Length: 103
Image (cartoon, rainbow, N blue to C red; front, side):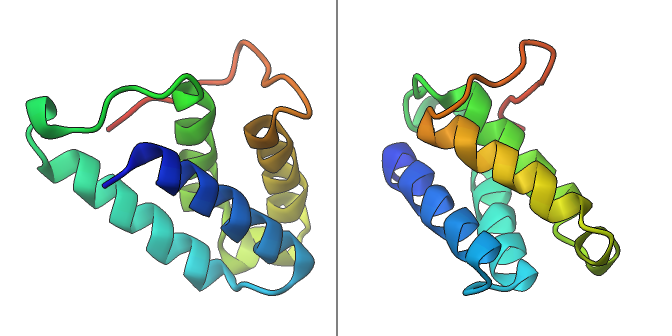
């Protein structure tokens, strides 16, 4: 798994979700694929740490928890995931109190 490729894919998927092109299921499938890979692969075989690693994992965990019908219908998913997309794109700095780490 190429970490930079997954970061770019995450940006594309989040953009599509916010635009209404992709469903929450597509986001969930992506994050679970990434989480499963990082959880099951020996640490020495994992890709090197990205400079945007904290932002990437924060977005992954937000998707895992927010890309659900309840959060989508109340608008909280779109608002939070729009912020996550802006952090991933480097358009805004992620708040220092936000946490993002590999599983």
